[in-house]
Image 1: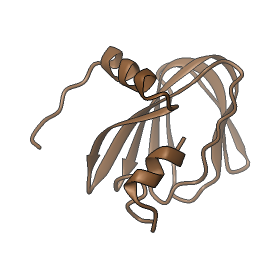
Image 2: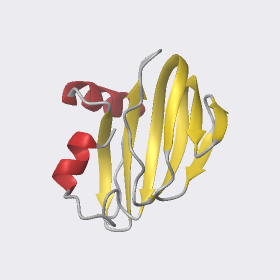
Image 3: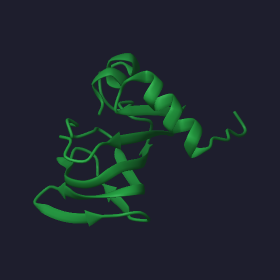
Length: 122
């Protein structure tokens, strides 16, 4: 693949159609990317990942717990989380839309298959 183009509106529609909180829209051996959405007051069910992760907050406001640290996030926030570090969003005060980037691709460093990771990911 030389290029892939997406719009945020298309990603949101695909995520909503899937009925899941997370919609992966790009997967290569070296990286993967997806859209993660949580509503105001929602609980974030994610578990630590086996890959490094970068969050870009597109819309919404919340707190992100990374290890023992609490980080406020808002549109434009960019947060790196190292592999295997416990983290989750909480205190969501505005519906949250987050672009998530994994390197290498999500769960490529674990024994879980891509299919099971997408159903239990976020």
